[in-house]
Figure 1 (cartoon, rainbow, N blue to C red):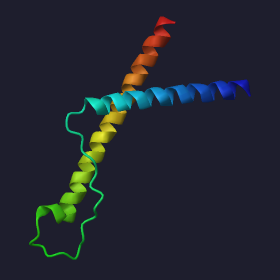
Figure 2 (figure 1 turned 90 degrees about the horizontal axis):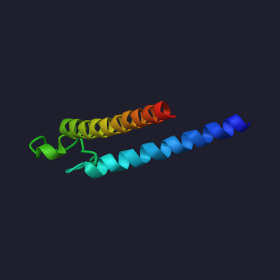
Figure 3 (figure 1 turned 120 degrees about the vertical axis):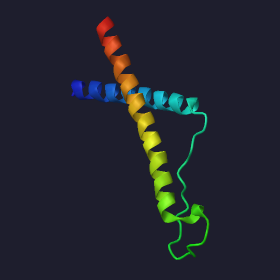
Length: 90
């Protein structure tokens, strides 16, 4: 039981560190993009602007998601490096 509590505390501490690292990485971004929540209508006239094109909407949102995934992976890597450095010095 004591080991489970200790494990939960470690997980909570790691989650907090990851969150702080991710927020710091986001703050370092010059031009942060958000996903476009407006789903384009498929029944619009094809002569409309590219903004309403479902394919470009998907491509843009995919690119935004990949950028955030890269930030999360970077935060996880930094946390692992810091954890390894801390365990080496202990």
